[in-house]
Image (cartoon, rainbow over all chains, first blue to last red; front, top):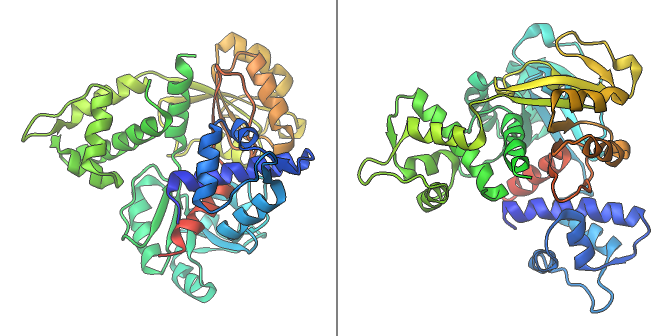
Length: 203
Length: 203
């Protein structure tokens, strides 16, 4: 298991490699991959050697091999089944098909506490939050995307963990407390905008 | 200017500190802050000393001082004016008020190439992408959120950079090429879901 920072870079490499493959590259150097995502060739080589991928001298890495190995590592060859909890504006957007969602990611259901929002979709079933437990168990769901308001986030999180959820992508602007065996990734859009202002300021 | 990783942690600290303040804490130890966001007290102390914040022995850090200093650093005391380019599902969600957006972040306008989407909002003006240049110049906009399809992302990005945009929060699943003086932060929701599956797998 690689660290959170490395897994992030590896998925960036994958995006860059898919792009390079479309452009006709069969082999690439660490330098080319690094340039695509803005890291040094040394970092690229170290990241790949960490997961036991090595390039060939004077030829580099075979693009299709790299993509296949990364897909094996991240399980991208199979289907990722998730639920979305909280069908506000962001949750609603996520439940509709858009290019940001990989073909292999499948939203099996959406949950909300507000009955007026329920049944407003036909692509995927939107259910009351009280139905989450049986749905999670029946469908063996392990990962949930949380797009609920800040005030109810920890409560909803506790409930999901009780139901057996092991991974959460959280859009609520709150640091969730979870047991050690549950992985949480926070996306705070406000924080990301703040960081863009900060890093863009001196340029 | 701190690195991208440190700025991310500092904004996590800020969220945790706001939470601790609401709970009634006046002073906190690095240990408490670290526990809130899952890093060691050493990392907390190092990050704070990097930006010249030091705690007092046996007392720790004063919560309100920390928040004020972080706000000064990130400019959170003033208003962040942005535009959203690409009014699909995600762009549409972002232009509506929700708790994920800080009060200080203000979306001045939205842009899209599809006329049928235009005028569908009354909260903020939605304009044709061709009007972006004059709008950016007139309002001195420096930061844009990009929620356009993958295929047009680089083209839209080039146009924004030409108009003087210096920071981009990009939701399109593509690594954008920008000049050195432009800062890009990518959010790939598909990649984040993939990472949650990867890190949750062994638990």
